[in-house]
Length: 472
Image 1: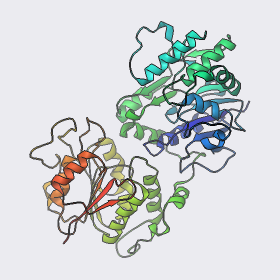
Image 2: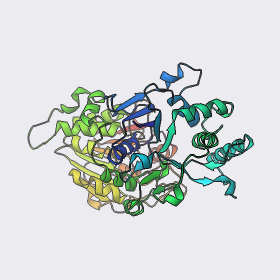
Image 3: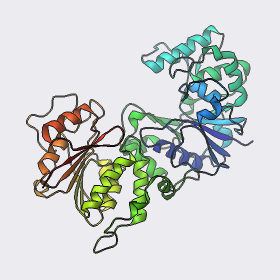
């Protein structure tokens, strides 16, 4: 029987890269899946061949109902998605943080997997999600259903009939709120188990084929070691980082048939003049238009970084100066864009994480490993000093552009950017342009006010990019 895969999808803070890797793993491990459906947001890079992948927005199904949009509750979203015309009667539920590590057959993957018997659990735990789980359990018990936990965070097998019948019987307990109401998998599959007492179950703990990372970002070596011999990988937002991403890029380097080529994505998003830098092809400069446009596409597909207008503002400055001396503080998926744009110039990148140092080492720029002595949950340095590892000669160079986009400053345990902003103030001279990303955060504004000149410009939209021009 033809089996489809269904993703309930919301744009991620990582530029939807998790979904890319999930789809690549699906294609590699389960090529027998007939079609992929993406219900919700649409990634910019999703393919256009509707025979193999199709996007369906919430609005398409919700027009027959009076639901508030976007749909936030997973039970309600799965019920709505099960109404999609063309979705196979039997299908696999996927999420963007589900990765298949090994080839797996249809009969094996299309089994219902269960985590635990909640009636045997003594400690209910704390937190919003745990409260939702136990609210679901208590409601199901009161209504005469079983108390198994089906929130396994691996692909789950469904039939449209099971979802329909569960929704019809339990709709009074289904909420539009994300966390209130019944948890999707536990409610639907306990309902199905009552209707089909002989339904085969696979206890995921006894199976021993799943691994996962939650709460903190692992190193690439930890990921490789823990994934060895496993079939299923799952992770949360806090686990996403250089180590996990590096592992996935090495494991699934090739674009899947569900994706458009980077150049096709760029044709939608990038301006036509992007590859037409005035000095392209002259003198010793080797500017590759294809590489530059692909790097632009990669950068703008990474949510949580800069917006396209902000990247264009930085590129305009590089093109106006280029080739130039460019200092980038903090590596990321957009580092390649700056290196390509400054072809023929000198680009130096300061980075603290070894994974990123290794990843950008092949771009042809200079990479310097540095360390920071600050944390946002501790008092700032007084007096401040440059990051450890900055060579003295770097302070003497005439920098045309300084871009501050690191280190991390989004959590209390993060280093924050006191030292990187201070370093920018030390190297900024007459004619230097300083860009500071994440200007909207209080810490960045406080340290910029202390060490830099008054801001000259705030770029685009939420104004998260500040520009400081030092006149000659």
